[in-house]
Image (tube, one colour):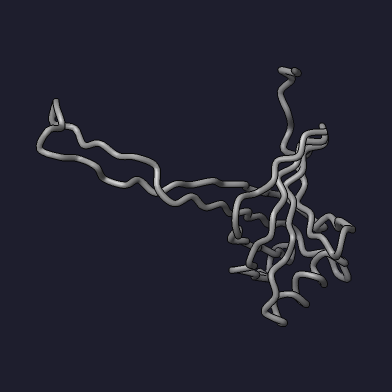
Length: 136
């Protein structure tokens, strides 16, 4: 197992049209986040004055953004899926071959155009079910 440190440039977000992955062009950031709610199980028997919890419902999101690339096929696919109220298959992929993939709902999709900067795009996906971890 490698212990090499990685650069953020080695991670890319993909959207899938059937089995073909398309890199979202112009990426500058990307986040894969997993969360779990805590279920409070504190009782009168709890010792030491601290609460107790157990894991509850889990969720995952992928978000990112970057420079808007005109005619980018991945952005076009996201626009198509968003307008059609359809989920997308998304991947958070490391250059070493490890990927997290799953089906997700595109919950936020914004294009920003400041008068003194580049046109940028941002997106957020809410995962459906457990994401698949693929090892190369």
